[in-house]
Amino acid sequence: MAGMLKKGMTLIEIVIVVMIVAGLMTLAAIGFGVIGQSDVSSESLRLSSAIRYTFTSAATTNTTLQMKLDFEAQTFLVEKLDVHGGLSEDALRGTTFQSVRSGDDERKIRDSRASLLDKEDSKFGSVTRTPVDDMFISGDDAKLDDGVYFIGLMTSHHDEIQTDGVGTINFFSNGFVERSVIYLGDEAAREGREGGIVYTVSVNPLTGQSTVEPGRVEISSSFFEEEEAD
Image 1 (spheres, helix red, strand yellow):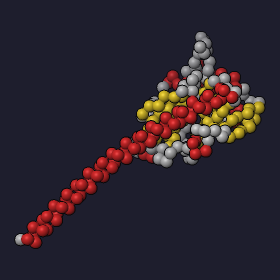
Image 2 (image 1 turned 60 degrees about the horizontal axis):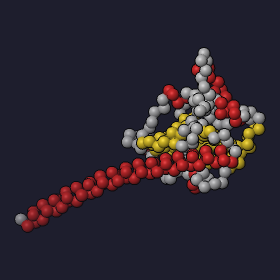
Image 3 (image 1 turned 30 degrees about the vertical axis):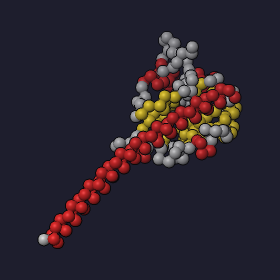
Image 4 (image 1 turned 180 degrees about the vertical axis):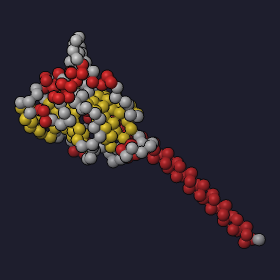
């Protein structure tokens, strides 16, 4: 009888241990989810600050800067562009900063913009690139933390959302940056799995400031609408 009781108690103990372990695993999963969300959120805020810093640097130093978002290395290094020939800064700026005049064909304007600008800088003409060595936008400072990834990029010179390779955001000396939307996420979001955490960084072209929002904010049809200068 004592032996049977001992066996029964042992089974009960095993059940209790299994329940405790299951509870701990559940708590750990919840904890990791919160940590993952915090990581993506903080990195989105850090990228937003780096974009604002680059915007200010371009305006105060009278230079053209380009932030390169590397979807493989998860970096956002910045380079100074010395443009010789090709499109002028005014022309580049004009493709995303102009009023749609009465009677103009809006589609024609957009097609013209797409023909002038592409994902890289092949339309700039001859370009001399100089890496920018500065806080926030060079070295380890310009790399996302482990577990956080670039998920997508859309700018005013993109025809569709970019999800791989190297994407670019151009900053001009006249205090203007390309309208941009950047998606950051965790590994699950990167792999397209359910439950992935995504944050959206939306860049204001006139101020260089960004809004950071949880979730994937859909790009509306107004994304490419030309803005009127104040």
